[in-house]
Amino acid sequence: MVIIPCSVKTLAGIRTGYAEGLIARAADVTLKERRRMVLVVRETPLSEIHLENMLALARMGASIVPPMPAFYNRPGSVDDIVGHIVTRVLDQFGIGTAGARRWEGFPGPRAPAPVPRPPPPRYVSTARSRGAHAHDPPRDPAQGPPRIHRRAGRPR
Image (cartoon, rainbow, N blue to C red; front, side, top):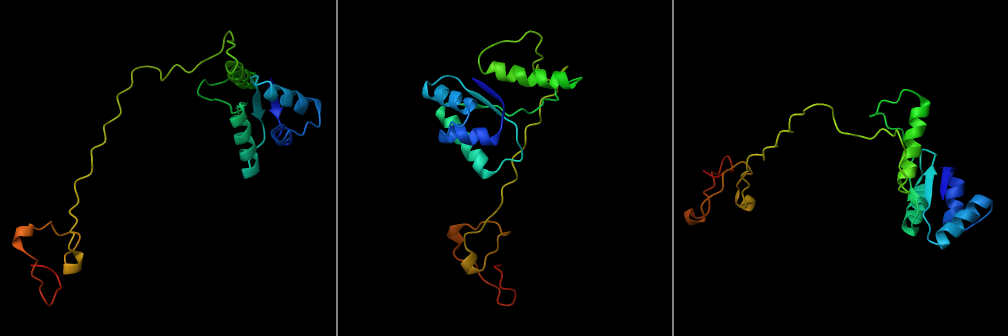
C-alpha cells in the first residue's frame, strides 16, 4: 500500500489506529496483516509529534519516504522531479521503472581525497599542583620534583 501524499493527520490516525476514513482503515489492515506500506509524508516543517508518529510507524514496519527532489540528475521539468519520486516509491516494492535515471557517480576521473594528518602531540604535564604548566615538556620522574622559582611561580 502506498499513501501519497500522506498528511500528518492521516499519519497520526494510522499510528493510533483511529480509522476515521477509508485510507486509515486500509492502512490499519495493511499493518495488521504485515503487508508492505509506504507513506510519503508531504508536510514540513515537522514537529516532534510528527517525527514520533513516523518513528512509531517505521517500527511497525511502514516505510517513510519523504518526497524530496533530487537535483543531482538535473531534472528538466516538474515531471522529471515527480518521476524520480515515483521511482523511489516503486523501488520500495522492488518494481523497476524503465527510463529511470540513477545516480552513477561523478563523471570523469576524480582525484582521491587527501588523507588527513594527525595533529602533533601535545605535551601535557601531570604535575599542575606542583607549579608546572601545560606547555612545559614532561619531566623525567628520576629527576625528582621540579624546583619552583619563587618570583615567577614556574619550574626552572
